[in-house]
Length: 199
Ligand code: C5P
Ligand code: MG
View 1 (cartoon, rainbow, N blue to C red):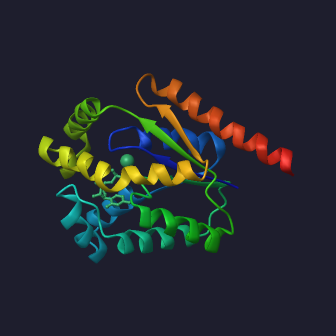
View 2 (cartoon, helix red, strand yellow; view 1 turned 90 degrees about the vertical axis):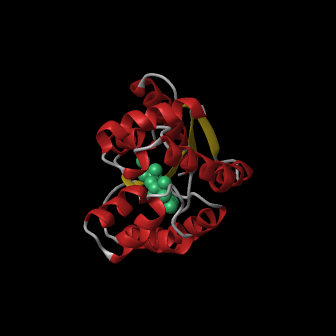
View 3 (cartoon, helix red, strand yellow; view 1 turned 30 degrees about the vertical axis):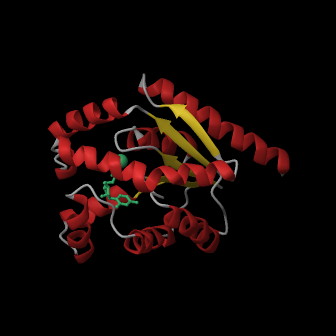
């Protein structure tokens, strides 16, 4: 089993790259942002609560997100592992993820792949995406800037935690989508080689 945290600021390409990774390695993507949007679309209680944070570009409280992720992970599936896209976003969530993966899958996080993109390009990409995404949080520059601020204030430290564990790898997230995917594939392939040596 391979479990990957796909990390990076909003607009760094996590969703796009997760799509390529799941196909290549037969993994399941769990995007907490997508799960919130699904709930918002269906106007569930969880969706209403999430919307009050998401529309402002703020993070939903940890326990709400952690419970939603746990429910999703408990659903049966026959993927070879998971890609966590947009989670963890805080130190608390990072610790919770390790515990949930251990408890539900009897496994652990293998690697944190971090897409690096400068702030100016993030804003440009998100404004562009907002032209078609229909996402309220992509729709104006102020909210976008706030999301990036939240990233530096609360999420960037997640990288430090994975660095301490020797699981953190940075990939340049600017350039051709397929070329970036190839670099990510190479990092995952290294993991596969390591585990086949151990077995
Ligand atoms: O991951 P994505 O960019 O799709 O997330 C959209 C929004 O969902 C975030 O800006 C944030 O408001 C909320 N979110 C969160 N906690 C997470 C993931 C997403 O609060 N772990
Ligand atoms: Mg996304």
